[in-house]
Length: 258
Image (cartoon, rainbow, N blue to C red; front, side, top):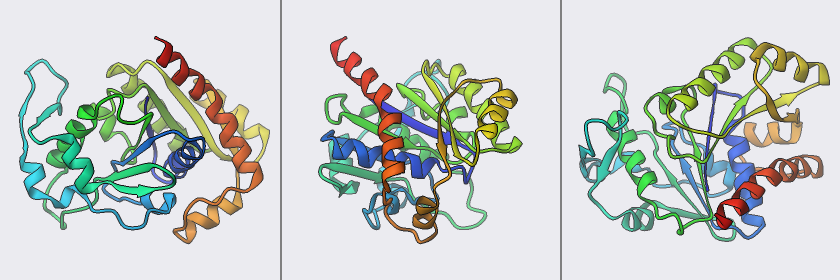
């Protein structure tokens, strides 16, 4: 099952991605995390330390050679190297059996966009055999570019994270629309860091979209982020994550039966 995360910068999507990954790993699932943000910090939240960046390997980037066909979504390219070799070369272990690969940063100021890097990452994600991992979690770049490029088009579930605030709501609304445009059928909006119940009702009214889950503000998690530390679960947050995961696991099991 492939799960992608989107949202405005600073709303906590990386924290939620890492938290979900850590609990899935604790449950015994085989999880691949993909840090698709050039400003990479997912590995820190997982406790994996520094991970070799895909974007720094020019030979790998040059292996992206052609579009599959003219009618495909913009940005869909074919990889000419074996994905197993990419995983072996770039993945780093974390948890019990998890792997993480990281796009990373490779450009200086004024050196242009990340089109080639994103295309290579897109091809790698799409080439991973379905049976290699139980879950693939993709922490997307802040904002909307990965959705507009179709990078997460193959996701079984898109989790759009938002916080209380009009700019966050606007980004979530735009992300929801783009996800539908590229064919993602299941989209969950998650409110992160609310202080009181009134905030939940306010965000529902403002977004005009259903909120699938709401995480209350958690200062322990904030401190982990401030100190660039691995997510440390207190009992309240761990219970919230487990509750949040239940319908995802139901979908995963249903997919196995199909």
